[in-house]
Amino acid sequence: MQGGDSPLSLKINNMKLHNLKPAEGAVHKDKRLGRGEASGKGGTSTKGNKGGQSRAGYQRKNGHEGGQMPIQRRIPKRGFKNNNRIEYTVFNLGQVSQISEKYGITEFSLENLYINGLVSRTDRVKILGNGELTAKITFKVDAVSEKAKAAIEAAGGTVEVLK
Image 1 (cartoon, rainbow, N blue to C red):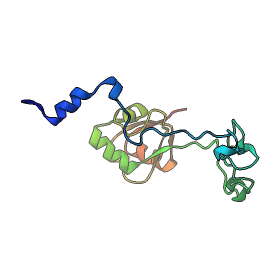
Image 2: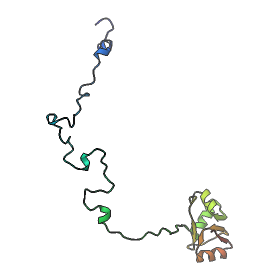
Image 3: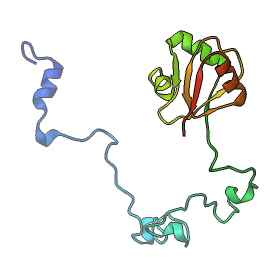
């Protein structure tokens, strides 16, 4: 080593294209499948015996359990789902009073509820009669119960049911 030469600088100086080698253990020979019995991987090419899974392009079907009765057929069906059911976002009169005080709403409509983040754009709103209505409020909603309608009109409000 000369004056300011360190072992690191010598290693860097000796690094040439003809000296480059991959890291120890990084390079290994690939298994040559199906290249005769002498390779140790001949014959079935490590895929077992005959059948779909030993063939090229095999794809397992969803829910296939190898010939066993699939779970969606083993378990009995229960219940009924009505596709025509109409789901409502429900507000009781007590909740309506709190909402009108908190947000200063005098018209309880889908637009006002959406603007204040209480319903989504596609929700349908129904008013139920549980609780007390203290303020005079105008309602423009999809559905109202009879008890709620009577309480709203008794408080001086109006109800418009949207189609």
